Image 1 (cartoon, rainbow over the protein chains, first blue to last red):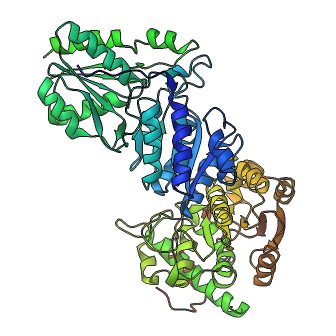
Image 2: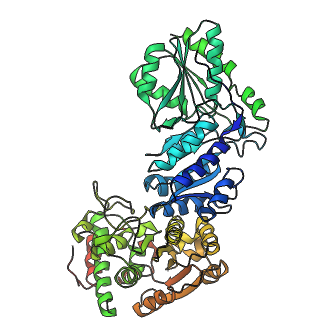
Image 3: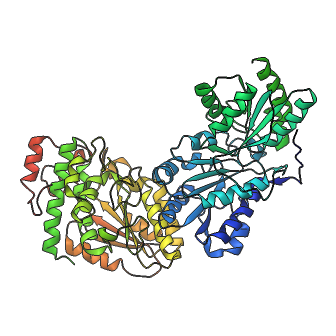
Length: 317
Length: 278
């Protein structure tokens, strides 16, 4: 089992903030737009270093996305930052028309995704955003797994020409990937080779999947761990290679069952290499108030549940 | 610079194009296209800094225009074709499978189109983004956008109204085709937009009211809108739905209906062919 060390818990939204500053230094056309959430989406450092390239949009997300599309038409590279719910569900049609169909170089920076937003409750906890963004033709959907990878994914999003949705979160989570590894859009990162079951995870559940793999190893089960940091375009080849070897899979995500990574994986496997798959996700319901740890446990989004799901998947082979 | 007589001649041909396009397509939106024909003719043939030969989607060195009310595609396409962005012969393909002229404006098919439009209320924000992009990059050109008055019921319009004034975008020129009609009837009976001039003034814009069927009035409004005073511009053009065809005038039933062959002939008899039909 490959060893990963948590170098200290950090919030992935701060990884975005750090990556955005690097992107701003690299390309003078990078802009930051927010809808009255500058501190929450960690745009403060960018605004301080590049005050003329920070565009406050006030509490008007539809206008922000439209303005970003126009800025992109003129050659700028705007990042629009807000909470995941307000940068997807609230402005879905604006994204569809002005960003996706218009194919403008707009980056949708999505913070506070999932239930681990915590105490604010269901109004602010979107568990549907990946489904919404995956459904849009041409939209790149990135869900990096920790702080370091979020820095690199933000840089990659800035360099890529076209619409990108990048999802990150509020809670501090283990930081364990190589800070210098460049982010490759469209690649599944194989975190640990194994032969009995493939654990497919995205976002901070990659850490939970690695913990699960360690526990399974102690039971004599060899688990391969895939980090799907790009949900779209989906790296079917890497998934099929892995499941071709292991014969079954568990998919773990902080998202509802409908339209998320689970269905992406199931679709690829059903079409190419049918295999038993177990799903770790939020099901079909809204979130609620609580601490991130309480909610992760209540919704079964942790290593213990991944271990149990892996046993089930293996038994179904 | 075209003379007013020349603009009138172009507008007459554009109106013929609209009628023939929509009749051939058997669907589309003639009412608002006819009410905004004179505005767009004056815009493209007199006011805008534009050149099809050097057009780029990023609007470098040129003004940009977005028809936020994208169902005005017939007049938009006809004006683009007559201005030289593509062959007028293409106009006969409007809305047909495989066409470059989609039912509502889309990018990547013909030159001249900066953003898709048709889902109402969104073009103003996109134009405001272009205006800011030009300012940030030190480009002197402007962004123009045409709204429907019914479209002004959309909330996003007023988000942008507030934001563009806050950011002092005096290189943004919005125009409203104020014909008083929408699909379900007169605007004042559907959801009244009220006194649009007072609303835009209250949002911090320079407001100009003009006659959208009188070229002297239209050109005078454009001249006033060149003022660089730190305020975005709204030109409210008083217009008449279906203008130029007697049986379509002022009738909201022609918002989105194609004429029959007989109606087409009756309409064309009222519009002089000046540049040669496509």
